[in-house]
Length: 413
Ligand SMILES: *[C@@H]1O[C@H](CO)[C@@H](O)[C@H](O)[C@H]1NC(C)=O
Ligand SMILES: *[C@@H]1O[C@H](CO)[C@@H](O)[C@H](O)[C@H]1NC(C)=O
Ligand SMILES: *[C@@H]1O[C@H](CO)[C@@H](O)[C@H](O)[C@H]1NC(C)=O
Ligand SMILES: *[C@@H]1O[C@H](CO)[C@@H](O)[C@H](O)[C@H]1NC(C)=O
Ligand SMILES: *[C@@H]1O[C@H](CO)[C@@H](O)[C@H](O)[C@H]1NC(C)=O
Ligand SMILES: *[C@@H]1O[C@H](CO)[C@@H](O)[C@H](O)[C@H]1NC(C)=O
Ligand SMILES: *[C@@H]1O[C@H](CO)[C@@H](O)[C@H](O)[C@H]1NC(C)=O
Ligand SMILES: *[C@@H]1O[C@H](CO)[C@@H](O)[C@H](O)[C@H]1NC(C)=O
Ligand SMILES: *[C@@H]1O[C@H](CO)[C@@H](O)[C@H](O)[C@H]1NC(C)=O
Ligand SMILES: *[C@@H]1O[C@H](CO)[C@@H](O)[C@H](O)[C@H]1NC(C)=O
Ligand SMILES: *[C@@H]1O[C@H](CO)[C@@H](O)[C@H](O)[C@H]1NC(C)=O
Ligand SMILES: *[C@@H]1O[C@H](CO)[C@@H](O)[C@H](O)[C@H]1NC(C)=O
Image (cartoon, rainbow, N blue to C red; front, side):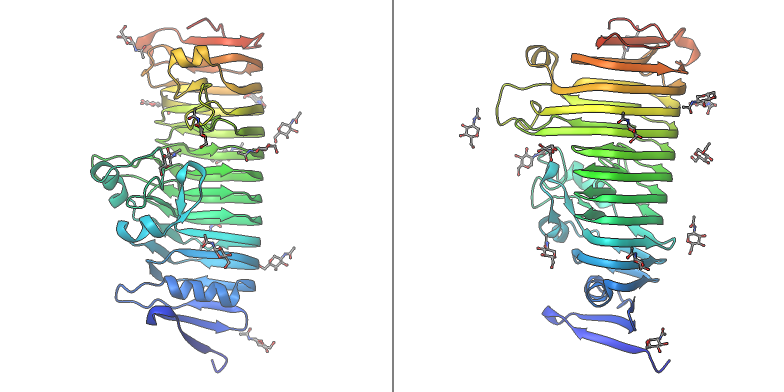
């Protein structure tokens, strides 16, 4: 007990931080009474973020952007609750801008050899953002398209290597739950996620993960209920494994969208998605790539690159609109896409044991593989997909797929 030293560091603006530091372990003490625990959390990372341990074992209310970068050999025990305030006026201009799709984040976590674990919760207080999106409005396709309404990502792994995030619950994210940004060797496991709206305004854009410019990412054994992609492989995601996932209410496990920005090259390769249960979803195994665009400055298609070596195996769907879908004219009108086919090529895509039932939203159609430039080396084995019985026999639609080897009879749309 005599070794305990209570550190009350006086921070700018007269905010006091409370951290108990014992050797290299920092335990954050809540300030209570609705006060902001952000400064204390920042202080703990500053003191124990290298070769140390941070303990977050209480309820913390956070109204300060967390920039905890430059960490090394640190374990973060989150057995309590980190809850962001629902303060749109604070977070919109202050959350950290990450450029890609105008995303912003409330917590930028970065460094080498980081473990975040402990059974605790990150609560994004999303309801105000779900409602605000409708009442205040968004001016772009994504998070920080304005400084008056920018929905922050609760946790971004930034410029990091060797990170493990395990046994954490995410509640009601304002936007994407996780952003993996310019990182390698990041593993997520035993994550429980629930982003659901209590009003008529849906939990929009609450992707489980968005991976960007990152390599060797693994996500497994997670239970997700959300309102957009369960996992999304954004530009330059390579060597990535996603397995043993339960996804409910999502928009699928998605490559893309890619090719959004003219002049950019987007690559997604070597992705293995295995043992997935996908329920009540818009899509199952999905690839979405923009068409071309005549403008050299387009932010709605015209980018270059490739999608290569993608496998979806042992993928069970139920009540899903598009169980298997590849669309190379994503968010591009048909006439533009025909005149300007996509410059992101798609090859070596394998569907193994994709089974279950569609929702019937597309009537009898259970597969759509539609390319604007020829897509090559598509295979499907062990496919057993049915629409609800009233729609009769399943239909499979293919366009511009060169010599596919499929175990179903795919016809022109
Ligand atoms: C803190 O470090 C000192 C010196 O290495 C050690 O004697 C002590 O046991 C450590 N205290 C705790 C609680 O680990
Ligand atoms: C985050 O903190 C690091 C280290 O202090 C600093 O270099 C960086 O500019 C900060 N980033 C942002 C977006 O504030
Ligand atoms: C990673 O950090 C942990 C402390 O969290 C430490 O025990 C371990 O030795 C570090 N690993 C390497 C390879 O440095
Ligand atoms: C999650 O953490 C809690 C609290 O430490 C622990 O009881 C539980 O066993 C952990 N679960 C997993 C899957 O690691
Ligand atoms: C990002 O925001 C700007 C306005 O600040 C907007 O012009 C642009 O279209 C947005 N980009 C995306 C991808 O939403
Ligand atoms: C498939 O994933 C589920 C979790 O969604 C897990 O319970 C099951 O054991 C996994 N099956 C195999 C064969 O690994
Ligand atoms: C993706 O990687 C390629 C090859 O390294 C590079 O040319 C391109 O600029 C990268 N694209 C993005 C969006 O980072
Ligand atoms: C395809 O991707 C998987 C998953 O990353 C990898 O194991 C395999 O080696 C890749 N195949 C080729 C030919 O690169
Ligand atoms: C593209 O952007 C450049 C630089 O901002 C500008 O000079 C050019 O006029 C733009 N071209 C089109 C077609 O919008
Ligand atoms: C699929 O969902 C329907 C309702 O949408 C349900 O009746 C059926 O039992 C489910 N089947 C399986 C195998 O989960
Ligand atoms: C596909 O399913 C069959 C039958 O259940 C199984 O034997 C086979 O191992 C599965 N293929 C893969 C790649 O998991
Ligand atoms: C489904 O079939 C109905 C009746 O033929 C038709 O009106 C509707 O447009 C079809 N929906 C789709 C998505 O094709």
